[in-house]
Amino acid sequence: MKRWIALGPLVLFVAVFAVMLPTSSWAQDAVEVTESAETTEVVEEEAAEEEAETPMTLEQYQADMNYAFNTMLMLVCAVLVIFMQAGFAMVEVGLNSQKNAVNILSKNLMDLCVGVMLFWLFGFNLMYPGEAYAGDWLGTFTPFVDRDTTPDLAYGLSHSTDFMFQVAFAATAATIVSGAVAGRMKFSSYLVYSAILTGLIYPISGMWKWGGGALDAQGFQDFAGSVVVHAVGGFAGLAGALALGPRIGRFGADGKSRPMPGHNITLAALGVFILWVGWYGFNPGSQLAYATAGDAEATTYIALTTTLAAAAGGIAALITGWCIFKKPDLTMGLNGVLAGLVGITANCDRVEQGEAVIIGAVAGVLVVAAIIALEKLRIDDPVGAFPVHGVCGVWGGIATGIFGNIPLDDFPEMTRMGFLIVQIKSTAIICVWAFVTMGIVFYALKAMGQLRVTEEEEVQGLDINEHGMHAYTTT
Image (tube, rainbow, N blue to C red; front, side):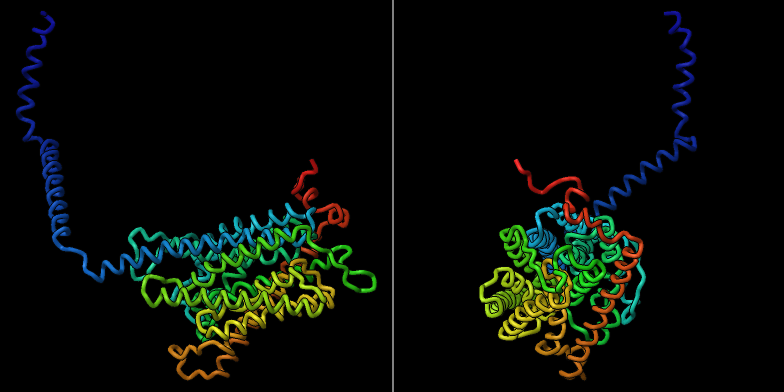
């Protein structure tokens, strides 16, 4: 008790000091902070009330809804195109020996994984450098993807979904090569190739058209990538096949072809059906806007021409193979469907329905002729990657000039012949770019002794030698 009494003066002092606190500087600051917070709160409340009192205009609402619809539907299309990786994997596995199944699946997996990382770091902004580089051959880039935390309604969709759609195309271009080099290429070297194509080669040529570059400025048309995607992959695959040489036993000492049939045609057929479905993300998705009545009609019309060309290509290839080989060869029909899809990809938005059938049918005949020509030239392409994507990609670019509507809105003086010349020249430039640059990569790896596996490893199979596992168990 005495202790508490002794503290009496101290308690009194503290009480007097507390009464004087409002006159101190730090107490005054505290009061000001409190008043400031209260003022801010009042301002925010008034702003919220004002916003509530001012409703969104019809134009703002429509722009907001268009942004949301375009963003989400493009994401669906991107997923469809990514799903095409499964289709490519099944086609390539089915048309090759089972001893290389794990290797092929690994390549298809890494095409997507490596493609995503390299396109994110370099390719996306290299392909779309901005209006400052319109009409140029090369732009600059910044890494990563800008996030539009405040939706860019004028752009019409989110940058994130734009990246998702475009990276799926980059992976498609890369994975085409896997089938052409199957059964004899080192996995490590394939990773090097895939990184260079998705991070550098494909984005640069893609910028020439889709990034507003030099070929776009001349009037080149390639709606969804017959040339920009498929021909690039096809000619890169041809460069790889030439650098590697044929598989052991593919051609005899007399130069005659010795068939090496795939181990599972069921998987190959399944892969083609998956690719056909995925193409509805590839072509209709390339409309890039779907919210208006005009966009919706255009998107569905693109799906119609795509379907007609695919069907015509399958029929034409099957009949052509039937006439030549005296049997209806399923693999020719399957490649014919893919050929028709590749051929229509550049022009699906600008041709009539009958023209779409013609384009698909011609592609079906071309793919059979190209497969036979490669055998005559002793070039080993196990799945027909170059005939389907290279040859029919070129046909798609040229067919656009023959049948497609001339882009008179942007080039009012352009004639049909002028349009055709632009298409031929631009197609040739992109194909030469892909073939030469990737040829340098493949032959450089070959010179270093890093391109092809040993003869013993090839005979035993790449699954066990490259990956230490088998695709199928024996028990």
